[in-house]
Image (cartoon, rainbow over the protein chains, first blue to last red):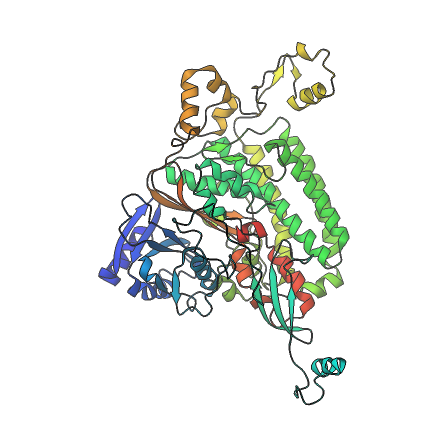
Length: 165
Length: 457
C-alpha cells in the first residue's frame, strides 16, 4: 500500500480521531488524537496490509517556540513505523499540552518502546501512562528539568550527584 | 564474629538465611575494560548464571540533539562525527541526506559515488573494530592486532580523502568537502588486498576455532520475532535470518546500481553475528570496487607540464626547509589545498547557491562569490530549508541510522533527532544475557558493538 492509500485508509477507519494527514517530501504523516492512539498503533501493527512490525523510532518535538504554533499543544510525540513485509514507512503523531503531558504507552505492542519512552520522559517530561518503569534514560535521577525542552537553556549547569546510596 | 556472619551470609549456614543460597548482585562497569566506553550493567547472579540484568546508559551523554539546535545546519556536521566515532562518514552522510531531503535538492552523480565509497570503507573499519575487540576479550589478542592493522590501511585511505582519521567532518549539505585525491583507486586496491589477507588469516584463526566456537555458538541468541519487536536492525537482525538492509530495501545514493549480497544467518547468536560481519566486509569491498570503476568524472589533473605536484610533498619539503627549486614549481591547486578548487567543486557539489559554499577562488576573486559566501556563513543567514520535517534512514555499520530533522524556516534546525542503531540492541541486551553464564556477558556485549558516542549522544 502506498502512503496516500495508507492515510486514506486511516481516515476512513478512524474518522475524526485522525486530526490531520499530510505528505511532505515523500514522508506520510498522520496526527491522531490521544484517545485513539493505542487503537491506531495496534491496528497499524496487526492489519495484514500494513503490518508495521517495527517501531523504528519514537521521539518528541517541543513546539513552544515554533512560529505560528506557540499557542497550540506544546508537544508532539512522533512514532516512526516500518514494515519489513511491505517495505513501507509511516509517521504517526500525537499532540499533548504541557499541563497534561501524558500519552498511553506502547510497551506492550513493541518492547522497544520501553527505552524510547524513557528517553522522551527524560528529555521532554512527557509521561507515558502504563509504562512499567518510567525512569530517566540518559540523565541521572537527581537532574532537575528536561533538557530538550525549548525553554531549558543550553548553558545551564547542574551539580553532578552520585548515585543514590 | 564478623567472619561468622559473613560465612553464614555467603553459604547460608545458621539461622539467618535458611535457604542455603541467595542471589548475589554484581555490578559490571561503568568503568570496565570490556565495556567499550562507559555503561553499567547490574546483574543478579545465581552461582554463575545471570538471573536478572539491568542496563544503565547515559554516561557519555553530550547533548548532541540540543547542540544541533544552537547553530546552522552545517554546524551540526562535526557533532555527527562524534556519534559513531568508528564510522563517522556514514553519520555525516546520513545527516546531510536528511537536510537535503528537507531542502528538496539532490547531489551530483560523482558525489553519490564518493559517498558510497567512503561509507563502505567506514563500514569495514567498524566491523574490523567490532570483531577484533570481541575476539580480544575472549583472549584472541592476535586477531585484535591483525584487525587493527587492517583498519590502519583503511584509515590511511580515509585520511587521504578527508584530511583526518577520526573526526573527519567530510560531508556537507549538498556535497562533500573535497574530491577524491589522485591515485585513490590504486591505493584502495592495495589496502583491500592487505585487508583481504588479514580477513583470510582471521578466518583461519577464528571461524573453525574450537574455543572460539564454544564460546560463541548458542550464546546471546535472540529469536527472530524478538529481534524485530525490539526494532533491532543491521548485522544483528540479519544474523537472525531477516535480510533487511536499508541499502537494498530503500536504496539511497547509487546502491541500486551496484551488485552486492546481503549475508544472513539463521541462529541469531554471537557466532552468526560474527559470520555476518565477516561476510559483510567482503561485500563492502565489492561495492567499493564497483563504485570506483563506475565513478564518473575521473581524477582531477593537478599536473604541471607532466610533473605531478603533490601538495603534501610540497608542504613537507617546505617544512624541512628544502625550498631550493620549489618556487619554480607553480602550484596549480587552490591556496587552501583542499582538493576543492573550482572544477572539482562543481563535480562533487549540488549546483545550488542557496546551499553550497562557492569554491574559495570564487569567494576571494569576485564580489558575487564573496556575497554568496557571506549569505551562507553569517549569522541569521545560511541554509534555510522551508518549514517541514523529514526522516532519512541510511544503513549504518550497526543498523538503521535515522535522522529526523524539523525545520521552522530559519537557518537553524528546529529539532534534530538521531535514531542510534545500537540503542535497540542495548535495550534488548538484558534479554540476551539473562539465563546465561556471567562470563558470556562479555562476548554478547561485544557482538552488539555498542558505541557510546551514538548510544548516549
